Length: 512
Image 1 (cartoon, helix red, strand yellow):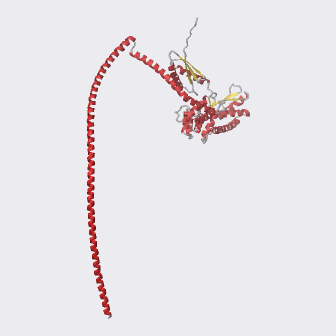
Image 2: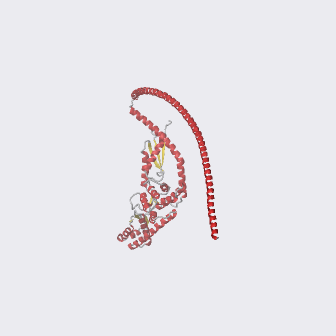
Image 3: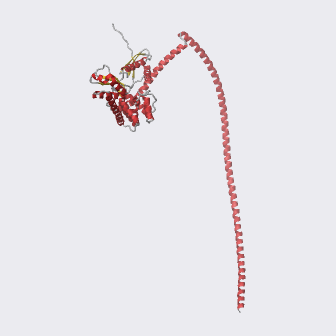
């Protein structure tokens, strides 16, 4: 029974599997048919839509093509109209140009005719001019060259008159501004600069208590004076001058050492070679200390810092150097102060101006040992010790040995002139003073039309008397200008020189 049951179950399973397969195939077949039908419908719908889109696109394209064609037709029509207008304008311009060419041709012919007429007239005028010149020469009994010279002389005289008046106007206008401002600046600077000295004279004469001291100074067989002169390098002159001996030496330092040593020997009374050598050595050390102290005081007074020790030592040596009776150190201090004050008034660096002013005469400390102008010597020394180019140029140019290249050079030159030319600052030897005045009068008298010339006010003004027959008021200003420029180019002088011209006509008669 079991196998029957198993057989029945197996048959049932097989029947079920076969039935399931058959059912599955039927279901799948129906789904495939439905899918195919749906796909065909979708394809048909897509084809319809594509056809509709194509129709719509064709319609839009036709409309766009029609619109573009209309625009092209319209633009073409406008361009055609524009070209027609331009052609009409060109035709009008061509017609106008033809008319102008005709007019120009006519004018050229007329101008050529006028030029020919003008040439004939010029030739006729030239012939008439030659005939007139010949007649004028016969009437005036003067050649053409003589008449030309006379005319040029008259024109030159008139031109000098006009130039003189113009120079006068320009100088007056410049003075109203430049002189006033310069005077204000210099006046303020000088008022603010306070100095306690006017001049200092280098001492070369030593007073002695009696003429008996001269013998002791000379010593037995002259050994004392020989020792003194050998150790100091100074000539000791013992002459008939009562109660005085003279020291002569080109080196101011050695002269100062000799002066102090001789005074100490006279006070001590023990004058012999060993004592002379001892006193001179001590005096030399004292003078070196004085030089250092003088340089330190000068730097402290001017507020200058960081200067090379050797350069500072040269500043101290200026204490014993004098020019025209004026102490070179005091003069340098004064120039330093004035330069700084002028710089303050003009708004530039005061310290640079003061430094350049203090060093401007540094060459005088060694000018007895080195050849050349003291300005160039001082510039070389300043360059050697590392001073700035502005200060070197200010030193070299303060006596016009070089061209000034900065405002500081001009300030130092001006301050130097102010310090040297103020009353009481310097003394000048009589011979040099007389020669300067004679040269001043000689320059003024060398000009045409000058009768007399007088140097007055210690050479600070030259008064020139003119001949009224050979000069006029217009040419006086130019003559004064020429004289002043000639003095500037040929003379060296402190400060400035005023040129005054006087033209006067005097008529004298007598009642009898």
